[in-house]
Image (cartoon, rainbow, N blue to C red; front, side, top):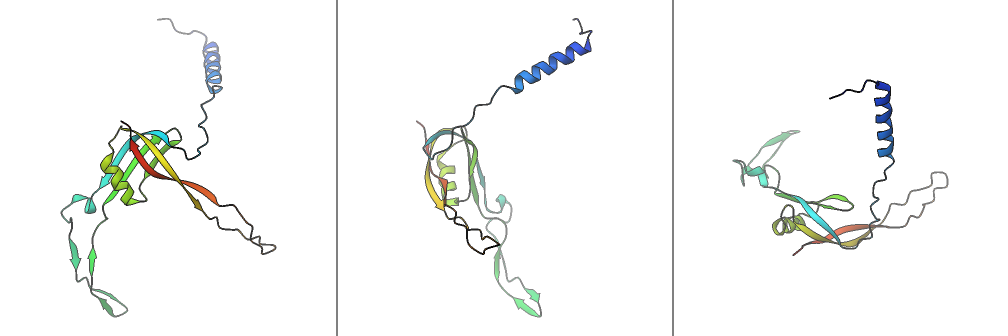
Length: 157
């Protein structure tokens, strides 16, 4: 195998290659309008309460704490609650469903990793806080922002 004997020529070729590749435009994703779209399930996550350890389902009873001379008796749960999440990828990026735990649990149970799905959305309009002009004291009105929330994820047949 023959080596390049001219390092300036090699450097020039590398610069031309880098310049050419950096000029190639990436495909811009289309603006999202809330219409149903195709996606794939990237992962499903389930974290049992107490992470399935020896303390599963146990509680500590009659904990006494003294603060300013007082005592408190009570029953307290230990550890985190059960938690579900579903992660999907569509043409707009990768998203996770976890805030609505009832919805996340249902989706976790009906979907599997790698499954092709159709994601449907509903529009939730959120009011924006009106900033106040500090010089005049008047509120500046801002339009409400639409937020697209996953309504359902339907498995493809």
